[in-house]
Image 1 (cartoon, rainbow, N blue to C red):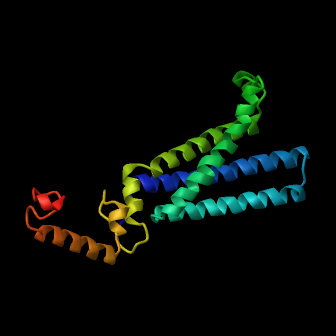
Image 2 (cartoon, one colour):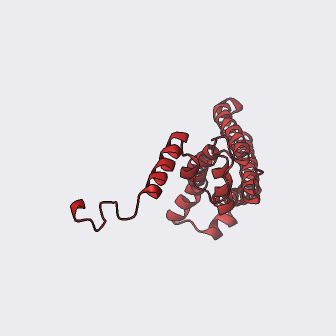
Amino acid sequence: MSAPHSVRTAAGLWLTAVALGAAETAIAVSGLLISGEASAGDLAGSVGVRMAIFAAAVYLALALRRGKNWARLTLTATLGVFGTISLVIGPVQYFLAGGTLSAALSSAGAADLAMGASRVLHLAAVLGAVTLMFQRSANDYFAGNSGDGRSRTPGESRAAADTTPAQAVIAGLASTSTARRPAGSGPNSSDPSAS
């Protein structure tokens, strides 16, 4: 089963978010190096951590496209929740402290404007990806790729597909014995001795 449009687009948006995150890292690192606030050695550790996160996000986006539900859940819980918080916490703190948009824009340099534009696009990509990953077509796709070795039809429940052969036999026997029972032979029949 090939990935539906919603999943392919979500994976593309996650890759876009990674690229924007890398651009934001480059802008921030360049600014710190140019201003002399930090040296390359000072920044190496945090840049390394970010590169590892970016690599993991790319891996998860590709697994998402292949229908791995664990990748969808991991992306949602990590980058969808904590990534979104990390993108908005700075601006939220700024506005809560009394900052205004006009003051921020009037004092912004080219790097600040580039960072702001990237952050807006980054946030839009993350929110769009999370939304698309849980569309009906995506849910059906992930249900069909649950790892049980077969594809389910759209709308077929996982519980129905997860029935073991033993459970199927027992269910079949139960329905057969119910079908063979003569009318009026059950405990709810009109037979007075049944009560």
